[in-house]
Every structure is written in structure tokens, then in C-alpha cells.
Image (cartoon, rainbow, N blue to C red; front, side, top):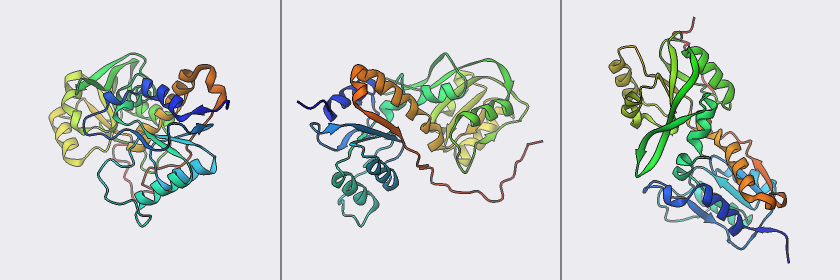
Length: 281
């Protein structure tokens, strides 16, 4: 009998960590390609199932690619290689690479994205920022001591992966912050919850012009200050946490697999021109 783990055995652990039932109703999580009975010796973790990430997984000999973002969130009518999604599906199938997605179910989990971002922000104890569909969304907690907004963001930047856009900040560099709210990925729909939480600063991504402008007008220059950490960067910090949790969940069986975290930066932005530092001294 082979000593190899099966995909089914690995996914039993993944789904204990990130139960599909905790995903939002609009989401598409779970097994996308692969045979539950296939052997798994190498697991690759990434934020996005892009063509470059799939190629990286194949080059490493991975039989399982575990990603945060879905490949097929919206309906498609063909998987011909003339489209990027079709080519991705083909490369996965031809390469015998199973793809599994843990998205909003990974956002809300104890070993999930929000907890990983809270760690990066320096929080040790947190509570949910909001509850949606009976699941805790985002986190809020206190720093050990108040620090300036600039010092807080500089420390956060050191703990997040580098991206071309860096971190965008709305607020005075010398403003004091202690209570911090976080939400990995797009989060400007929770600005009301942030105000209710009493947070001094909110770390999220994909902040749009009008919601941010209105939020800062309502604050009259005070708190909550806003930090756009970038969608990819705010969620990439989860990969190391997911890797550790998966290996711990496998227990003694962890010795039978190798794990790799993708080195492909799937942030779509590549460089910035003409940035104005604004309120920087």
C-alpha cells in the first residue's frame, strides 16, 4: 500500500480549518479540479490561481494548489484555451494539479485572513468587526500602546509583502492610534461598522474614492483614519498561517508532504509614477 496521502485526506483537514458552510452565499469555494483519490505529495499555496501560479505549481511538482481567490467565481460557458480561465483549467487538468479554493470561509476562520492581518497589525486579542450571514467578518482590537499613524503604518508595511502601490493612508501622520480594525481584501462596505467599533484606524483594501471621501468628511479630520494596504498584500499574509495550520492538522502525516508558498506576486499593479507624498514631512 502506498504511503502517499490522498487528496481526500488533505481536504478533510482543509475543510475542518475552513468549513465550506461558513462561506458567504455568493461565493464559490471547494474543489475545482482534481480527483479526491489522487496522491498528494506536494501542496502549493497562493492567493490567486493565475496562469503563472499554476505554472509555478507544475514546475514544483505540486499535486494540489490551494488558493484564496476562486478561479470560477462567475459563470463561464467554455474552457477553451483561447481564454485565460480556459487555459488555466486546461493546465491544471493536463498537469494533474488539483485546485481547491478557500475564500470567504478562510476570511472568517480562526486560522484565516482576518486573523493573519490582525497579527500583522500588531493585535493580539480581537473581536469580530461585524457579523454577516452568521459569520464573523473582520477583526478589531487594541495595540499595546498608542502610536502615531505614521509609525503604525510603517510597522505594518514591514510585515506585509511589498507591492508596487505600497500603502495608501488617509489621516494625519502624527495622529494617535490604538484601536485598530482590519479586513483583508475589499472593505469599504464596512465603514459604518468601523465607526461603531470605535477604531482609530481601519486597515483594508480596494478603498474607493467616494466612500473614503465621505468617511473622512464625517470624521471631520479625526478618526477613524484609513489605510489601503492593497488587496493582494492584505491577504497574502494568510498563506504562511494556512500552511502552518494545515501541517499541524495533518499531524504525523505532515512528514509525507512538502508545502510551498507561491513567490509569484499576483498584485496586478507593476509600478507607480508621479506619486505625491502629501502630508509627509
